Length: 578
Image (cartoon, rainbow, N blue to C red; front, side):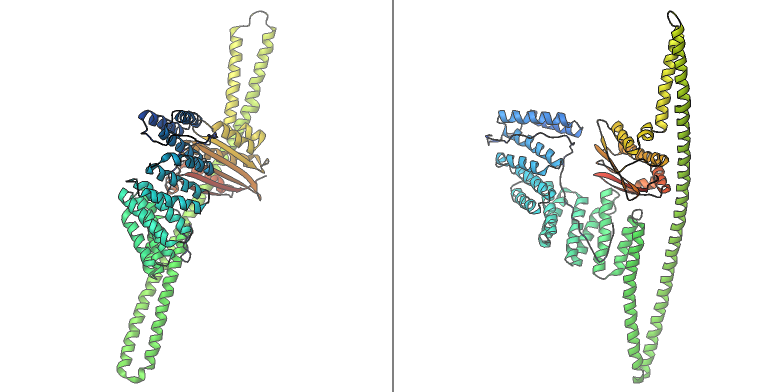
């Protein structure tokens, strides 16, 4: 995150509720016609059916869930069960929405609106979902119309503050994009009030941060500061992730607000708190921001000093007007010089501390580079040892077992009558040993990689690693045969990343992209899992991740990891060795 005191970019948090689904192809459903408008309560049996369909979707059994959902919809049409038809069609529209087909999802929502009647809770939900579809499809004006309708309908709905908070939150974001800050502020306040009633402190704090950001964009720094302070008071110093994120946002936002008010000392204080909280993420940025705040602070001090000097010159001109005035100027000058001396000592101490910190960072970097080189050398030695063992197993041991088996087979042909049991058992044992040696050789060094290259080996890895829980795919572009050791190192890196994805991500889909571009091999590995805390992983110094980073460093490459609760994206770029 690049921070610039002169440029404040606001990205409003748009709160939406989404369902999990797979990428199973969905069939089109006929238009709903001639359905009775009266809505009767949904019985427990029908409700149980829809709950089971949701469970199937959550467990990844998408095809079975969709087949049963179509059966329920057809049965609801035949029995004129309007409420069951509405609820099942809403679920189908949500599935299309999750697959990115916003147009079809909106069509199904439109079909059930005439059936809803005066069920204002369902109508509010459908209008909210339609607004979300238009917003995700980039149709901001259509989204605005549906959200406003949802607000009007919501006036007739008791409770359901959670949905109302989301609607007003999204409206705030849209009005911000349309530069209607007054409306954006109005809806942000309403959303914050709802979240306050619900007790969602972290979400309320996030909305207040957005509200303060809108005030900041208008140049209302005092109002912005009040909103940021309120956000900070809500989350306090809790240690949960959302609380830390909200607190971090409040710190940096308060620094901006104080900077806008020209209170650079306070700005420096809160920016320092922000960097202390995010030190592991943006160390280099910290120095840059500190330098910028110090620069502004020094400019202000120099302006003060210039004013003092101007005053001194004026006083010097008035020396002729009296001895008493001269004494006053002398005392004032001594006082100013004393203050300058104290300030000089303070600045010198700060500079020494800064130099010591830079020196310590340099030492830590040297240690880290040395450790990476040692680890890379160890991995290279292990790779060469594996190649030697695999070669011996495949070229020597496997060949000797095959020769022994051929001799046994030739000898058995010369024996008349029934073969001894020992010969047959020996052949079976030799065959099993040959298969185990082939498997061991393949585990040491992938035979697919050696024979067909990196692209085919990655595809083979994804196919073999896919299962009922996760589906892995791969794409390759401009991939040819490279240096064999280089291919093995890259394949080992991808294998480690895929294994981590399967073990820890809880993802349903994963993709490995490989491309040769401008003399470099670029890898992009991403999934839709739960993500992880990058700072926590760095502190734990996992062996697998350290090996990957050491390997990439040895190849003069770079790695960038971005992770959130909606998935993880890993980018790797290394110079190609042909």
